[in-house]
Image (tube, rainbow over all chains, first blue to last red; front, side):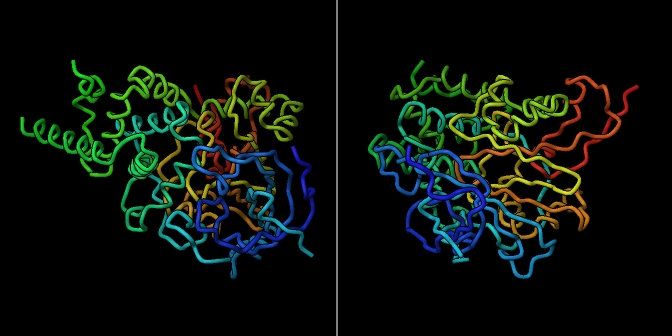
Amino acid sequence: MTAPKFTTGQRVRIADRTPPVHHRVPSYAKGQVGIIERVCGMHGEPEKFIRGDGIPAQRLYRVTIPQTELWKPYDGTASDILEIEIFEHWLEPAE
Amino acid sequence: MSESWGPHDVGGQEGGPVDLSEHDIAHWEWQIDAMVRLALSKGLISDFAELRDGIERLTPEDYENFTYYERWAKSLAYTLVSRGIISEAALAEKARVIRDRQQAEAAS
Amino acid sequence: MTGHDHSRTFQADHPEPTSDAARIGLALRELLIEAGHYTVDEEQVVIAAMQGASPENGAKIVARAWIDPAYRERLLRNGGKALEEAGFDIAPYEFTVMENTGDIHNVIVCTLCSCYPRSLLGMSPAWYKSKSYRSRVVREPRKVLAEFGVKLNEDVDVRVHDSTAELRYMVLPQRPAGTDGWSEEKLASLVTRDSLIGTQRDLRVRCRS
């Protein structure tokens, strides 16, 4: 099991890319900056799976994104949030 | 935010009010659900990712028009046919047999 | 009896579907059974297990967390372990419990498909799988919640959880007032499916004479 690349509280950017295969990042979250809410376990990463060869395990995180960053305009409070699960290879450190 | 990349990628889209009515799951829907679970436990598919992958390959029209378990059915059929576990010809023939059977039952 | 008759278990009040897509599913099922990939008996076992799961399972977890603060801590910190303690298992998924408080309201969705902790909540309602719910609850959660009758003031934050991968979520609703001293079973009876998804906030204490 590899050590997690990111820690709770760290600012991260979700990659803005669209691989033409099954992947679990909704388009609304792509390119967004959020904060690691928790470091989860290693899980089969569906994007990389090769039929019949299983699914390589990859570190999973929960990322918190302010709703006011995601949607403009957003009808709610400045502290409303959205939380989403993102695999490690979709994340990079953000300022 | 980038463009939606498949018919399933709907988060943030606009839509009408949520239809709150409850529904019963029909017998055939339980059977489709069980079939997918058994396909997984028997190793015919290796992960639910394969089921989702097949669903995401539906055309936007099919995705929109199919019911939930119709999507599952089409997806598993796609995967098992492309893996050679079931032949496309046998599937089409069996579907025809079922349709004939249903029509005969409806007429009787 | 031929193999094909064998795999037919429809009853008169459960008519077979007549769409082409559904028939492909039924055809696939019959072919898999005929080829020996699984049996009708195995199918029945799987269906019975699915039908046996209901929100009562989740309700038991909630009631236990209400009564036992140490259990509540464990549940929020490591949902999977706390679930095992209570005799449930949703491996390989990570069970994740989000607690409602006076100023936080949680709601669960799966925008990409319709991931749902079935073993604890039973089968998902149609609306959970609907495009309208999946598309809108992330963008306008307060408006969608209002359609469910949940009116949130500005002093309550909304937290939307999009179940995109291997976590499965349940909301821990607030314990209603006026339930001091209630038994775990009686408390569990207050907990509804929608309160576990987050489309209901206040649980009603039903008066029973």
